[in-house]
Image 1: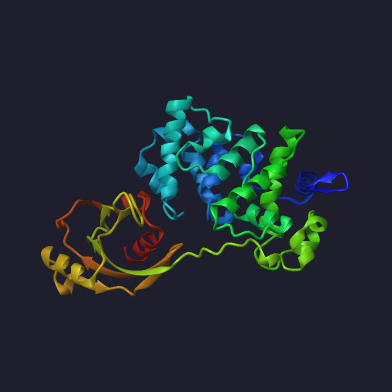
Image 2 (image 1 turned 135 degrees about the vertical axis):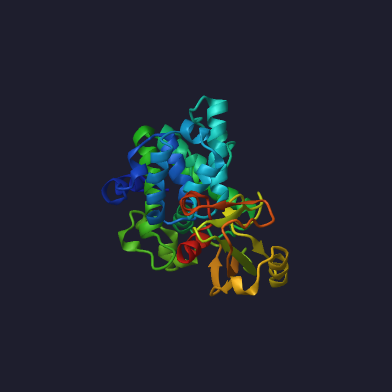
Length: 350
């Protein structure tokens, strides 16, 4: 697709140099470790939230070897509050694979990068383009929106065949020359267009470098794109949380199962039913005078609403509950990998 003698890639690279974002720390490097870390953190997470975590991670784990050598508990603790915790587990696994199989150097091709834990095709494309100037496409949510509007691509992306077709279009539009400069600029430019110009609602078409080429703008319906019919089915669950605390501020925490919500994180005992919590209270010898009802609250996940019902229990200094858990002092639980809503709850209660 061209505008006179100018290709889409030329227009995007020029626009990015003049108007795109350049202040973010991961934009000032071609270090695959730092680019990879930012790409994983930015999945379904706002830039403003990621900035603090990104800098904290680099201070603790300055390179892939340091991350690989860390314990999973340390990694999860540092990730605590960022959400989507499978990302942290895969981050740790990926670092270990890069060190053990590639000598601490990230591979340079999309094919090899895509074989690493937690790295999908789009993330692999971003690393390959930014760090190694490979002609590699990305197709995250922002870029998908830009491309479908630009091309007037109205096929249903819930259908795998149509998703593959869009990938083919994305690859066809990539720069073909001066790749060392053009590929990072084009990739960042497409991301920036989706983030600040070609937004889901009220896109700023008049400031877009692709305005004259955009099919959706000519049709007058950019918000029609992208088309995806499959919707997430939301569900609700109720959980009862038993917060046992000793006079010194210690809290009883258990490790969540390796699969499911909050997998692998430290958490207070969780019960799927009120009756199960009551049974545990009796089994553990807790009296009603020890218990305090805390106001319930809702924690919203991507596809589920968790209705959380905390019950606080004050126990004597030498009390040991039944179960595979441990007492964590205030200094310890602050550093532990905790789900964000539990961390906030403990900060209020302890």
